[in-house]
Image 1 (cartoon, rainbow, N blue to C red):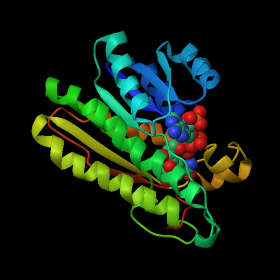
Image 2 (image 1 turned 45 degrees about the vertical axis):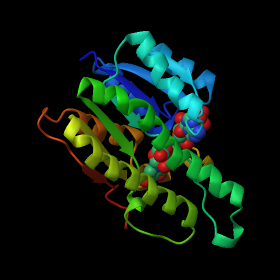
Image 3 (image 1 turned 90 degrees about the horizontal axis):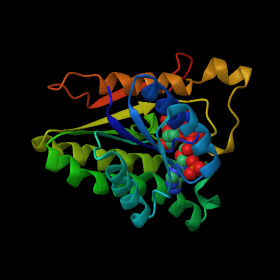
Image 4 (image 1 turned 135 degrees about the vertical axis):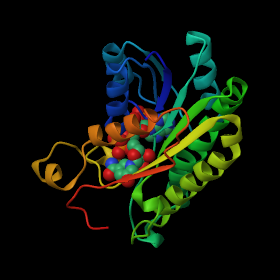
Length: 231
Ligand code: NJP
């Protein structure tokens, strides 16, 4: 269908796979990230709109929603996917790195939702999909900053779900295990990762599933793992 969907972190990895799948299905994709070149390569394929923005910046986040509405006159779906992570023992972490992770994963999700929700409320309809992580539900060593940010991002989305349900707005949270992307400066496509990780397209299929639920159904949570992953 011709639904208009904003996808943060669409320049690569999971966000890009979501953008390609939804565009293939007829959605109008608004791709958001900080890197212009990758976005324009993608927009070439999706024939949608790309907006260069840092979702941790309030003005940028507002601009993403305003520009989408100005360009298409509608917004149906917001996918909060952009995220960053790095992993180390607690005492190795700097305060700056902590802030970078929380600003992107937690504040970025909050700011995009804050920008989109008034529009969704006015039309009494809308769907927010958050890509969090299975580590929003478990702890692991070297994950003090990233794990805590994903618990917090999950709590933002879970609170919001209760807040906006009376307005006809759905909030779905997806919890993937390991995914073969550029996350944490890795390079996808190794034969090893093929055995141990989900592909970005697997997560995109999960997004498609939650979006295809009938109007009276909301998929609150969906967790998926590679069969090989012990968690
Ligand atoms: O990572 P990657 P993934 N403003 O690095 C963008 C979660 N997750 O696809 O801005 C706007 O390939 C960045 O673009 P750029 C993870 O926590 C992953 O794996 O140009 N955009 C790029 O498009 C995250 O929430 C795994 O640098 C910003 C994208 O985000 C989500 O999946 C496991 C931005 C990141 O692409 C997607 O990550 C899991 C900003 N401030 C959950 N900062 C996994 N990979 O194993 C970054 O459980 N971006």
